[in-house]
Image (cartoon, rainbow, N blue to C red; front, top):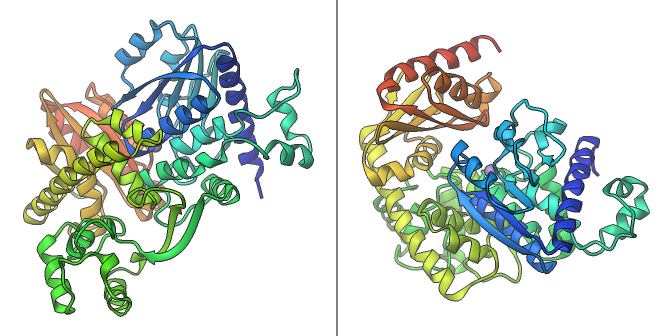
Length: 478
Ligand SMILES: [Mn+2]
């Protein structure tokens, strides 16, 4: 069942699809710009796969952030079509200056700027759909190429596809539904799948099931079941978090020993009864540890689980190996996958180090927010992730939003996270970080539940006070 809002989003996406198809037909190399997290990498993968399959060419660049200087640089390039995925919606004003065609497939809160005719802006927020929960950047990119390769009668435009059910059915016969799982990898990357898919993500899920390459079954949701010893599988499981075990190798060893299980064995090598015992004990710590697992059926076992696939892309992105991540999303396995797993191992070691640090140091508490701050190179790279996990695993309290502050030369990079519960109480971190960073000559923004900012180091204390005041105001005035 497709709702009206979703139908409007799909129609907009189809307009983008027509533009992409035209440029492929004209043999134009398509310029893809995407974000370096798991969602952005999946989005780029979805677009690149689809364009490649149509015989088109693309040139992809992955960015940590779309800065004004990036946009200026890109606007000088001679490409006739740019696709911005998982980014772009916040920068409409600058993107309006482009001379080329532009498709923006983003799910972040858009700037309140009228787009010019050369831009097709595909964004769930434009149609009243919650982009932080119901669809990811990769999902938005997927909608934009979903009907690429459809055979259409000449003269038809995207609009005719809304007319009538038969039409829709006929049009759905071909297309890119095999890319639906990769779109959901992106959703997992943005934490939209861990509690089950809703909204547009659910439509994408249906596509994957219909195509037949996506399977759902109930299982323990610990990571690397067939590739790591059990105590590591448990300690490396960040979502759902297991209090006392997540990020804690010794804690996990002790937990398994107490149960009489050998901690060095792999989960897949356990006897069935042992698996049941383990399951019962883990459920006591967090019932969410057992539930629906989504897998790509013909996939290599390391990537088969969509959530784990997103963690591998995330590890590559965080370690600046975006080319490697893209090649995996484009189907390379063997050596590429080995290289990615090596990076993931290193990344997991960093996360463990970060969790130990938080356990030791705790957070700095203000009345309405809490924060952690570091200048350590390794800690800085994992702060956003460990602050979220520390809250989920109850190392830190969940009754205040948390800001992770990492010193970058003269600036401080801020990443903020909160809970759905606090969002319900009125907290909007995206707005708070946007407004407060502007006050100190920085910039920031994002979703209500997760946002970021960059501020001058010398203003850090004032910035924290202002954010604290803004969150207080949000809670008291909602
Ligand atoms: Mn995203």
